[in-house]
Image 1: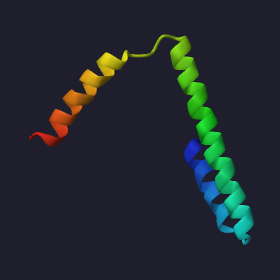
Image 2: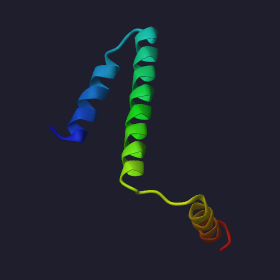
Image 3: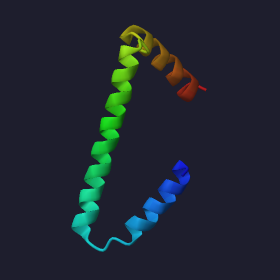
Length: 71
């Protein structure tokens, strides 16, 4: 099953929910799960050395700002 199929099926299930409390719990679960996934990805990147220094981040950020707002 593709991710798009999963999303479509999930949306249809959510549409059937009638309880506000259930929807609120579901939202909390989704947010928590997403945060946990992002944390896991970040920790894996750190372990694999896929990081940049703060100085490089600052430099890249300033360059990006120039390209976006100083046209």
